[in-house]
Length: 221
Image 1: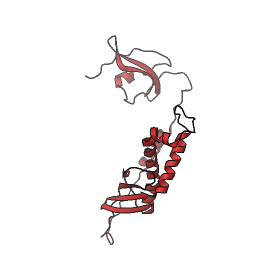
Image 2: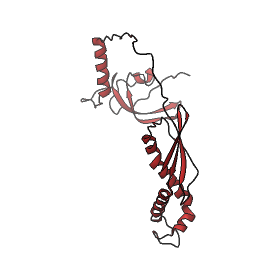
Image 3: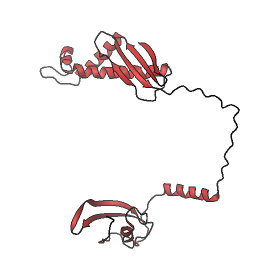
């Protein structure tokens, strides 16, 4: 395998890779052997289909797979060996595959620009003073508690109240007509969170488990 590297711009390089004919033929042979064990063609026993017949039906598919395999096997390895760290997916261009001939393709990649940092030695900077109060600590602890909290069913039977999480089924109507998309099951709602309208959430307070209720609300235009 031979490699040529061309710098197109400070942020783009082109790598041209040539794969030897024997490697191409080896991959083609392997692909056709694998294909022959899987496909069925009328008039031939599975696993005994001649290569010429497989080529007649599957040549383009096999060549596409082999090209992908050759590129995967060589492209990123070549980039790594030459210290090229791509910041984007390589753009591959190839001239096709042919048995007994070398396979040539190029890969364009974007890279980080090389920046020489100057003029920072001897500079004076002022370190920012960070003051953390007990209130800040308490607030962060409360956030951690909230993020790690787990919902549990209440121990004793009681009515719903603010800050409870309830699971409800609901269906919306305008007059006697059901509103499309407003029939929902097993919806989790924190009462008082403002997720729904306040008028809606307020009317869910004081309900017992399994209780049904008709709720009337006025929505904005």
